[in-house]
Image (cartoon, rainbow, N blue to C red):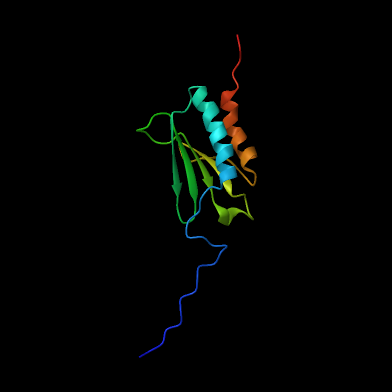
Length: 114
C-alpha cells in the first residue's frame, strides 16, 4: 500500500473563477437601471469564467451584446482590471476604478433638450 499526501487546498488569492463583488454589481446595476429607464438597454447577462467576469448588455434579448463590462484581476497591476468593450471588440475604456471606466457609457444618457 502506498501513501499519498493530501492534496493542498487552492490558494486563497487564486480563485477557481472570477466574479463581481456585491459593491461592483451595485455600481453596474445602477447604470443599467438608468439606461433601461432611458430605453437604451433591455437585457443583460453575467458570465463568471476562470480568468474573467463579464457583464454583457443587450438592446434585445436575441442579439450580440452592445457592451461588455469585464473584470480581469490579472491585469490589476498593469492597465487596470476593469474594461468596457464595444460590440465590435474595441476596448472603449480601461482602468483601475469601475466608476471611472463606466463614465464612457454614461455619456449616452446626456441628451440636448429642445
